[in-house]
Image 1 (cartoon, rainbow, N blue to C red):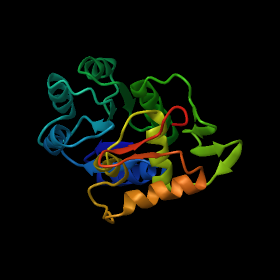
Image 2: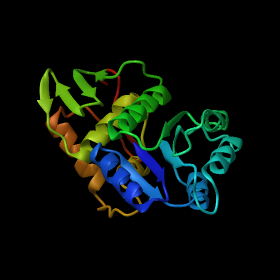
Image 3: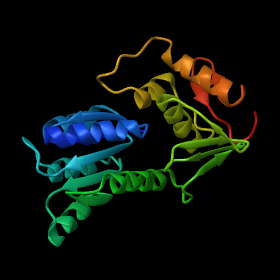
Image 4: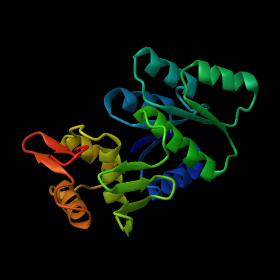
Length: 221
């Protein structure tokens, strides 16, 4: 999942970026509201973690503008504003969740997982498909009951594709999910990740649609 983190506190922003990357997320970090608005208008993200007290354009204004534009990206607000009316204003402006600083990192991660489930229409905490089971809370992957060890990007790729079985992902879309703005991408990186997943699980797991993209079918094609 690709996350846009908007936080102007450098210490907190850096810590959040590293913690979320360790969970397998691709995280792009911005420090002001105008940059965030421009990024949300031009780039694709699966979720935004948005501070309210931002320079140049406050978080509520960013939120209201993207909702006015019809963007339905899940938004989790992080803020030191803990008054009930502040929370009401955030939720009524289109936020999907609201977390007050200081907060526990494990709670933030749990809330992000809940937003992932909600946005994909899932109710169960685990994802099971074709003898593969993913537990997002522990990032454990089982195949036929055996634990499979994956790299961070292999896990992210498998999670995203299993979350939307039968959905065709273009190479560019998968690349956006796996690599942030500050990360270099080898020309054959996507093919390498897919090759490794097929080898660690089974060859027919990911089907290639030449000239189009990749898909994990609900049942064997």
